[in-house]
Amino acid sequence: MKSKPNLSRRYFMGVAGGIAGAAALANFAFDAPAIENKPKIDASGFTEEKRVLDVLVIGGGMAGLFAAVKAHDAGAKVLMVSKGRIGSSGLTPFAKGIFSYDKNNASMSIDQFVEKVSESAIQTNNPVFTRQLAEHSYARVEELKTWGFFDSPLYNESFMRPINERNIGVEERIMITHLLKQDGRIIGASGFSLDDNKIIHYHAKSVILCTGSGGFKPSGFPVCDLTHDGTIMAYKAGAKVTGKEWNDGHPGSATNSGSSYDNWHGQVEEKPSTTSITINHHLGMDLNYQGYIYGAPVTMGPPMRQTESEPQPLQGGPFTPEAFRMTSPPPPPQEGLLRTLISGKGRSGPPGMGGEQVGGSSAGMAIHKAEGLVPINEQGLSTLPGLYAAGDALGSYMSGGIYTQIGSSLAGSAVQGAIAGEAAAKDSLNLKLSIEVTQQYSDTVTEEILAPLKRQRGYSPAWVTQVLQSVMIPNFVLYIKKERMMQAALAYVEELREHHVPMLLASDLHSLRLAHETENMIITAEMKLKASIMRTESRCSHYRLDCPDIDYKNWQAWINIHQDETGKMQLEKQSFDKWPAFS
Image (cartoon, rainbow, N blue to C red; front, top):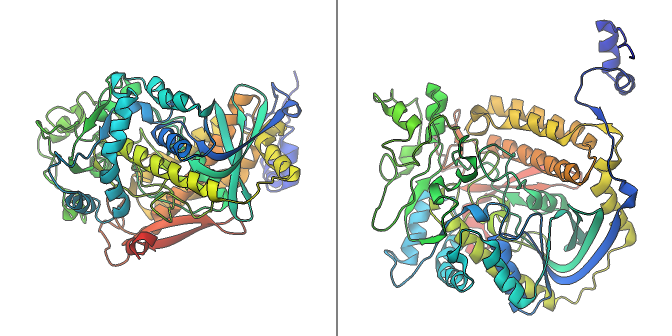
């Protein structure tokens, strides 16, 4: 056996400071995470294929379904590409409640609905998309009924029914990593198969991102196949993204993690059903704050699923903006209160939640519809021509920085997908541009996709992901925020982006997927920290311990993020009343 060299501390410190020292240390048998890459597949053996079409829909959830159907019905040649199975991946299959505004039976008008959502969201919502949800949700639900959506807890069969009837092309288990751009317009996308050594370049006149949101692959929540892929590839292509400071607060369970998401929406074994108007203030930071102050293993539990016959208001009564303000620690809990919060008994949250996480189970994800691409119109067109988004990939702020309407996430995805699909089809059919992707451009994209397979030495995506999780998921970093801790976390995240991302390794198709997902999560973490540092107030699902008040003077604004010409991340304010549709 080869013996380990005996190094003095002085020699170690001397060589560790420079590139030459790092290269020398690589030859020593230290127990370090950097490893030698031993690929199981040959990167030079990949084949390349090309597809040409009018509209490319990326994502196979509720938004992707309606985007593909409506784009086809508008006369476009459509292809649907998904990293998973249609209707069986992402968050769509776990949502069992879908909101339907039936004007003939609604308890309030659409104007009243929009006003109350805005009140609960403390004006963080975009009322254009809030109104759009109410106006179109009923029609989308009626279409789902004709496809058999409400007949089974499994969605693949009902999703494939309209797809097969229209003979819309579908390609599953394809990870899209790059958007193709020419003369400032998105003209397609590229990715690789998760089953074959194959790169595919899709040339399209319009692209619709229906890729959902994402997280940091937390335990106890079915968000682990969502890693902000669409948002980050769009950001790299030059699109603006938004909403990264908001936090989703679904609870998690170690004993029944597969159904933890639907302790609120309904157990995953249930068939989906419709929900009516139940505006409230869900998934905030109140119980995270309790856990931070008292050190108790309380959970962040949303209210139970509500019905018209059994209204169940939030604990503590109706929400008012003043109720969120925490200028001083809360009074000591009443006797038995923490025991109640821990056990889940006698409160308006899901039962049987003892010992679960305080938030964290959806770590890295924002409130539904609060993060994603910045839209410049109500059709979901992004700041890049040719690129649309819908559902959780679109930063529409349909509900604002808090979840206000049970079932609105699924309904919003259906509504936005349908509108974006029709708009993208019309855009592509009116476009006279000839899509010509040079071989040099395709070769560069292919090289970037396969880079982790070709690196000789570096870091495993699993190890880098674990480091990211340990930095980002703690309650005192992600949920109960203060600048000192966020700046410390940001230093770690920037180190991962600068040093570890360029050294991510892959030995097979699965780890190649993990390498790209890990990079996406790291960039997302940087966005979340920088946006959370920038927003010096507390509002909805964003809570700053060092800035506990709502700042109406300075923060009636969303935060948008883009990449400048040098590749540096830039943040900007966009006033609530400056969205194009308001002017």
